[in-house]
Length: 404
Image (cartoon, rainbow, N blue to C red; front, top):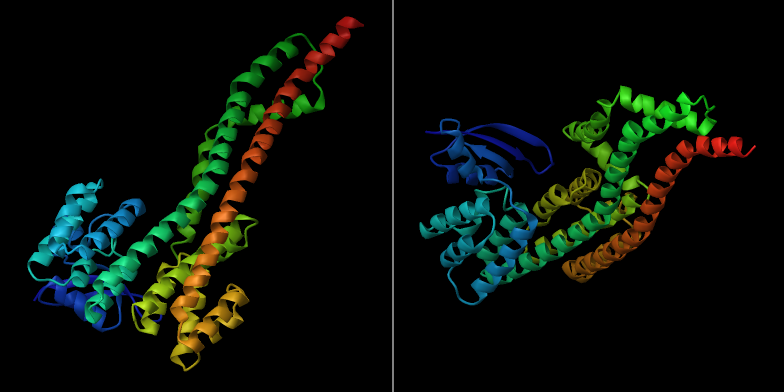
């Protein structure tokens, strides 16, 4: 019997790995799910690397492509197009070649009689646990068309919110890169040529000019360190996020950053509310839903609170009660959850919370963009203007000397 290597997450959010004997890949996946594990990687070590990649699920797909796919799949299925035909059509018209291979592979599995939830479960890097769980719930309840519509709305809102945040962040990043490039160019080529002329004429250099000259000398001497200043911080953050403790520390710090921390916090709360609402509406078991939400919320600090709340729920508390002790969940969110739980409308309340925070992210991203554009221009102007003024000061001194 073949042996499979797996990596998974249990109900407590702990990572586990090992080997498993099963007749087929599908049997291995179903057995691990039966143990309450959320599979992140499953492969047969006896096969080739190429086969492993295809079996495991292929490459990741851009959010934009996946969002369009969800809307098209929902529309086609509601129109009466069979699932096999829908996947074949979508595989031909998607712009992503890796996604084409995944969709064709799923279409072949559906043709052979495999359930959609099992087929997409073979590709966890493309179809995450939210998609798989909601499709599985739709198949079990006979409401697959409704679940696909919910998934389409879910990913459209998620994609829109994410793009808003990216648009607010990209301008300061680009301006920062431009500032570093311009300053480096001036310090390396412009400043030395001007200062060399003044030194040849024996003109004494004012203090601001001497400071700029010293910085210029350091840049020319240690120019090879400049790329490291750009590469090392992201690499260090990436290494820090490899460990659970480091990931928690970084995500907590990220929430506390000035301005951008609030934006990230609101985005995480919107994702939490929208995902939890979608899973609850799909009748996914509460503990299972909280496990999924904690893994896809996008912030380990908030994810840890959700996992702790899940343990409280397992111990008999209400859904909202464990969240009350956390400062990461505003009172409004907790109160809305409590009201929804008491009235049996938890999904509707969470939808309202998600709408509120998505609107907040939208408005805040627009404000940040409007504020940062002139601010970054002023900062760039001050830096460049300061350097130009410093190298022009000896010229003013020379002109005063000539007039005298």
